[in-house]
Length: 197
Ligand SMILES: Nc1ncnc2c1ncn2[C@@H]1O[C@H](COP(=O)(O)OP(=O)(O)OP(=O)(O)O)[C@@H](O)[C@H]1O
Ligand SMILES: Cc1cn([C@H]2C[C@H](O)[C@@H](COP(=O)(O)O)O2)c(=O)[nH]c1=O
Image 1 (cartoon, helix red, strand yellow):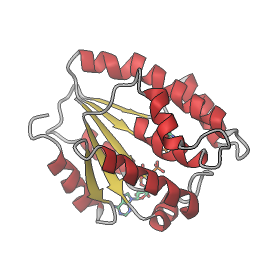
Image 2 (image 1 turned 90 degrees about the horizontal axis):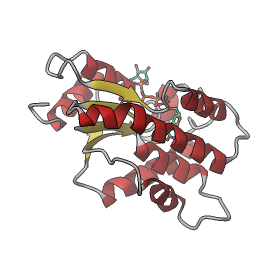
Image 3 (image 1 turned 180 degrees about the horizontal axis):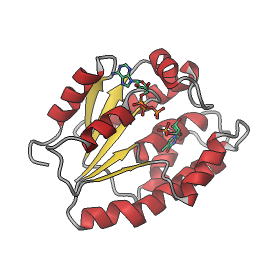
Image 4 (image 1 turned 30 degrees about the horizontal axis):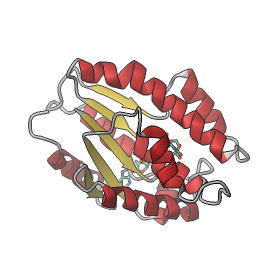
């Protein structure tokens, strides 16, 4: 089973991911992973994140290359072995974030749809996605505005894109109110997961 954690910067994904990893109810052989990855593809993504002038289309394909390698070397092999995979960010981050960075592209009429189409023939959709829903102002404050994506204005567009993704695939997403305390958020996430993982 592939479970993904999604949401704005600062919504608490990594906090939940770390608690799940330490949770006795989660199988010992579960694979905890993330995007961007720690591979050289992920390093290339990180360089792009750190470059305020990075080309948005080039950046989309760097993230997408990282996803392709992540699928091939980590996600698919683990699923093949029937292991639980929990990923801190996955393809929806691309649809929501690059859908937003490409919003002004003169070449694309619907950037979010374009990014989905790029993935569709080869990606492996999650079985369940926990969406940690947070307002953009709190997200920007919590994340500390450490990279170019972490501004309330930009995150408002990203959030609108996440809303569209949830609306398009309501059976896959579970929305959790990320303004709650970390404890309440974790309880809600745990309740969203199947009892026997
Ligand atoms: N429910 C919560 N309430 C208040 N603060 C929280 C909550 N969850 C996490 N935080 C704090 O917000 C900050 C960001 O949390 P975290 O790194 O888990 O978010 P994230 O979604 O993984 O962010 P990013 O996408 O930027 O990596 C941390 O300082 C964390 O302690
Ligand atoms: C996977 C992915 C990530 N991003 C953005 C979101 C964050 O601002 C940074 C790094 O992610 P982290 O969770 O804070 O480590 O990258 C993106 O724009 N597109 C993606 O596909």
